[in-house]
Length: 243
Image (cartoon, rainbow, N blue to C red; front, side):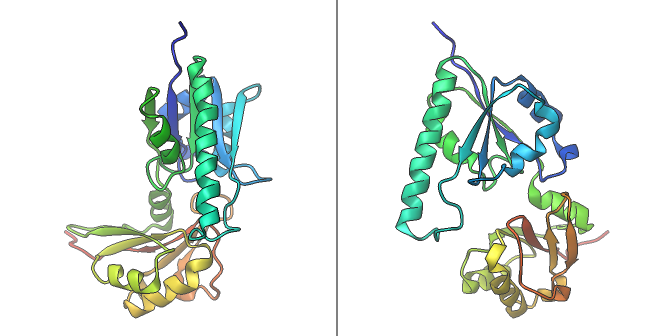
């Protein structure tokens, strides 16, 4: 009887391959199949980070999203398409695992932090052995490269998706000491307005492609436009106890 393979969710860090952990590198090198999420017609970011570790002649499985930003998340068609995608991706991986092959799913940042891997984990964790390899998060990469200590003393940190309504952003910004606002994309104008209303615009730092080629770091108040890619976030550092 074939011993089933093991599923690995591998955190590849924020972008710079130098931030890939020793454990992540070892798993990627040893897994029988390397799986990675990708937008149609593009290489996935996590796969690009792994270039140095994977080498040539490896078996790969590209998990290509049927939609990304073409349909609003609230559209019923989005949920149906993405749910079917995760179902099919999980079963494709399950077939490899059942045949005794270890599968490493590459993940940007950390697998359990807003990661697509979580949807595979939820479907497969009761059927196969799973190991999650933590990774350096995008936000820690960004605040480190920006030179911005994010929390001091007893500061409370809140992580906010920019997809929230402006009123929700203002409310949550008003009850925290420090914040990270992720998933900017087309939401930067709304985020800027929320920060102004919350009285935090002067503390806000914009980071684009943190730790990657083309990195940009600047005070948000000095950013002239409201353009932001997927790999961008706003940091609002705390001002807590200094000793």
